[in-house]
Image 1 (cartoon, rainbow, N blue to C red):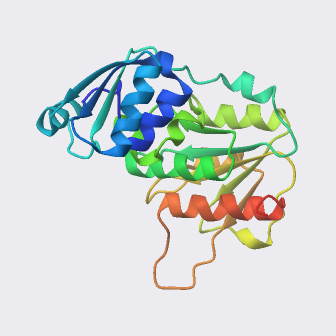
Image 2 (cartoon, helix red, strand yellow):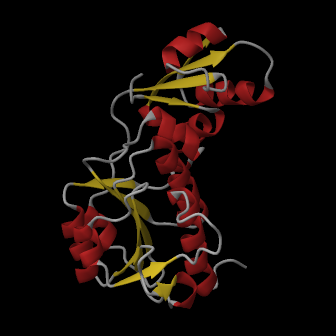
Length: 246
């Protein structure tokens, strides 16, 4: 399965709406499904070639049977991620970044992107190595959010956090060992929320770059939450404090 594919109704429609210039060919299931017919019509309006085909062929092209009847081939020149310096020139008091320290599961990355879109995150920052990238699975799980929230891979995550701090961004990390509860910490000014990897949490060097650390209070028997669930709780608490949920 090539990374130059997008499948799933929401992901395909969002890319055709936002970045049709990166699309080369749409493969869609023949039939009368209204959602698929809308996507086919949108592709044709955007000047994208359309091939109507059967489910077995779509399974083979996607390398999966979870394509929801549409697979979009990209031209290999997708929208480039913005440079970190470009993001730092647009800092405001309500700037909000999400930093994922080594999240390797594509389903978790896709879910985090979807939550980031819903919470108004300006960009998601990830390390280039030992982390999930923008694959077809990630795009499908993100349900279109991969086309709206910039995903910025960086070579050195600790150095990127230092650059954020130098631009006036406060770095808040999450760990079960923190003394302060998420719900007792004030979130003022531009922020970067750092979430650790599945199971291992943040790396030591990443934690050392944080201005402060918070924990999610756990009242039951489990010791931690899935990273995408914890991300959603943290982002919405930040937005609640900022009065952005009305």
